[in-house]
Image 1 (tube, rainbow over the protein chains, first blue to last red):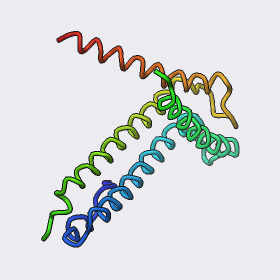
Image 2 (cartoon, rainbow over the protein chains, first blue to last red):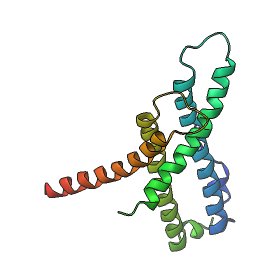
Image 3 (cartoon, one colour):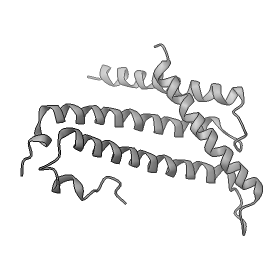
Image 4 (cartoon, rainbow over the protein chains, first blue to last red):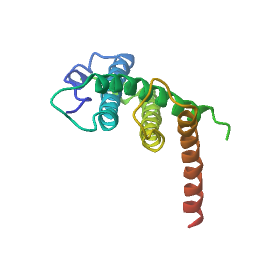
Length: 88
Length: 78
C-alpha cells in the first residue's frame, strides 16, 4: 500500500505552481507519517496489552490499550525533547 | 506540458527541506520505538514512573553519544 501514490501529481503539474505541488507533497507526507505511527503503536500495544488473546477483548485489555496509546505519544515527546534540547 | 515548476531551483530547495524533515522524523520514530522497548517493561500505566521517563530521556541521549563514537571510530579507519 503506497501512501505516496496519487494520480494528481504529474497529470496536473502543467497547471500547478510550486506551492501547490509542495502543499500536496506535505499533505501526503503527513498522511504517510500518521499511517506509520499508527502501525507502530498497534504493534507496541498489542505486545504489551494482549498477552493471551481470548475470545473477546476484556475491559482491562481495552483500558491498557488506551493508556498505551497515551503513553506512546508521551514517549515520543520525551524522546523528541531529549534529542532537540540536549546541550551537547 | 510545462515542467518548469518541478525543475526550478526553488522547488529543489523546498524538496531538500522536506527530505531533511523526513529524515529527522524517521530518526525520532525509530528512537522512540527502540527506547520504548528498552524502558517500558510492564504494561503501560496512567502515567510514566519517574524512572521510566528518565530512562526514555537517557536512552535518546545515549543513542546520540553512541552515534558520535561510531562516526569517529569509522572516520579514524581511513
